[in-house]
View 1 (spheres, rainbow, N blue to C red):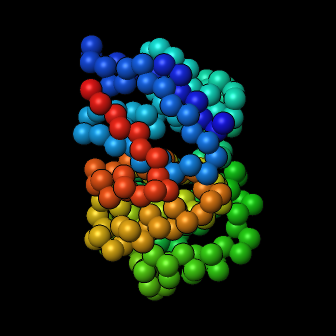
View 2 (cartoon, rainbow, N blue to C red):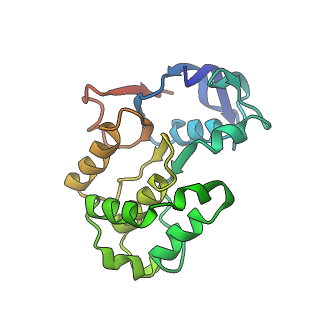
Length: 209
């Protein structure tokens, strides 16, 4: 079992965001986290990554209880892409290079130019965009650049928080087709769009008040 959520409760200002929440995720699962705004979808990601602590219950990763000491193992193996469009400054090429220059990511620099070219082609971004400044990109372009940046890390667990909100329907489906088609990927995906809930490859966590 990859993730186990056991009786998780999280409360802010006397309001429960999550209450007695339990769920299991296996390697290779594709999970759509659904529910209205403010119901706790992003909080669930923050709990997984150790940015918030549950008030009650436990989260296990590969059978190990997540805490301040063990969460670093998870963070080295997870790629998180959020909905924030303020993802960086400078050129797109520089953005990718900065990410891959971090000590934990240096091993992924081999063959990266070919990977960038292939991913930009798939996500319908011209190669000339590599020399554009991030500030010049549209919201949809920034979202696809952020997704490519995460894929360059060569990780197999992805937490995707509203990462297609600025894309049209065709591109949104193309992005999700990429993640759904890879059996080795475990994907937790937050979206206000319900187009994934009827996909047979996708499990749905429906969060309710």
